[in-house]
Length: 317
Image (cartoon, rainbow, N blue to C red; front, side):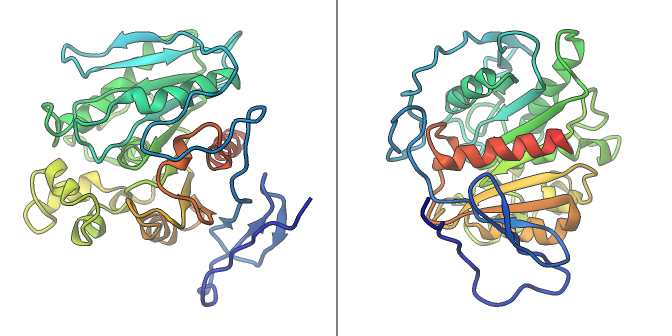
């Protein structure tokens, strides 16, 4: 086995911060006291019996030779976008993973982005709940988008065939924001959208998530996507940013694993770095050297494998 490309950030770690280096599968190599940990997995290699990495254009490939389980479509409301797809494993599920797709909260993309991940998770023994929601341009925005993802998760409360004490979420890009916001629901004010969850998350894997909405809007992430979502900028509707931005809801009370590539030009890794620095021991950052925005939703890559390993750590904690 060749030596991995272990990448060290320029400059030294701030006081109280730990940088944690590893081979793929996160075997510790170098570490120092403090927290939160930062992981550097090995660069992507082919997976699944010779499938090669793809050029990522927002849709994950389907070269996995395993049979794809048939998802069950379940509506949680009357709107065409208020539904989810539940993919069950063979036998009793180990846990439930809520899959939240991205697309800067806009109507252009839907839960089709999460289907390859749901199939991979079901093959690994998880029940995957891949949720759709109203998006900007399709009756979404504030507060509809938030009400929808909350209602989708709460729908699980009526299912006795699922281990509801073992529910985690994985979300990509804008879906990483929503997945992390879902974990923050227990701390919301009683009159806020999504308050009083019927189902609580045990943890979240944020895949290149937009976790600081104020910083994202002020730095042009998504070309005004945050303002479109919330109906204005941070100076126009500051109270909405306080309720909607995961970094503003800290502490969440559950762990968050932030997986982010260094070559991501859609959502800069700064988003995950800022969140992990603010969250302290509640969060960890998995740095993917040379990885771009969409590799984390391609189940043939080691970038997705890093996300899967994050889920395993959450459920093992």
